[in-house]
Length: 523
Image: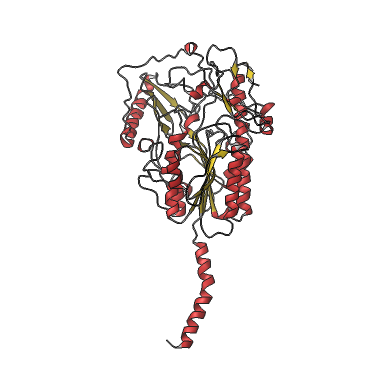
């Protein structure tokens, strides 16, 4: 080729470089910011109808994106519901096809990393260290565990060689620390041409609910009202009434105790909301807001007085339903959806929005067709399970719950009874509905590999005698005191039935101290 032609070619290539770079910039995959809370009920966001709670930053996300009102955790085969819930979210697999440690199970973050994403984690990880190091390329302030004093949690970082540092104490409230770590990571991504997935897993509002004092003050004078389905105790033996979470308040539940627990719970949610706001501000200031898909979700709900329960070890909606919001590129603004979905649909949806293929075995469904208005839903019903005690199917109107250990079935008309308070199973007019739903429940079991029989040959008693529950000696958590003491376990008992006084439970811990109170006056 003549020398002049070579020069002309070089000039043309040089002139084309900016256009090529611009094209590359336009085809860069969007970032992902996943904000994940712990035990947050679906009905705890002001913009979605709760006028008693303050969530200004979550309200902004609702306005900017689409909120799915019927997002469910499929359930759990253990009392620590958050463990399988998170495993399902990360793998996209259903309840009976996971293991708690995600051993030999590929995760969605791994697939994002293979597609060139920088995958970052901060916060709670409840599925063992090996799976974390396989899923994330970098991370800071990681807590391996379920719960603890948020001021003294043991945390670790991921080194550049994909190893974990020695654990150290958090030194400040963990939710604030996790937000700090997320903000630091986001600032580092400013101007980067590499997309990222940032997984930010708060350990609130899980107990011990020790939000800073100013957040508790927001609810001291006007405590939240009782839930519409409040009961002093559950009306029958649902199967796990002595699990740890049910011992956070004495039987029978009283209105004052429940309202105080709700006030502390709301205070913690408002505190977490403030940390979400800080992270969103950092994203905007880094110029990354328009290029980032934001997801907000929680791993499960919580009872806190609903149906006389306190934990999430049931298949009632208050315990299995969680908030789910998507914001960002490809997501409509200011929308809500009543489509049935699972939390395990989150990453398949992100995969569809980013062009990332899911891992082997992922069963979740993309919600993008719902977002685009192409369909109203991706499934016609929801299946729920809790250990060998409960199985459920819900459709648009009806919900059935089967209790195999006591051979009991309940039926709710959710159109007329959304809080699940009126069991209609005894009405002969509903026999066909129960038969149809039982058939669908069995079909779900066959599809998922659930081998639990729906009836027992040797059933347990239907009634549960709460007066005979012993006052067990459980370790209550004492948070850090301002002078640095605390952060330890107490051997004093948490009260159950028949106990006159009780320690302020982890659900009522506040202002970094523990007090002894009357069950009827949790102040």
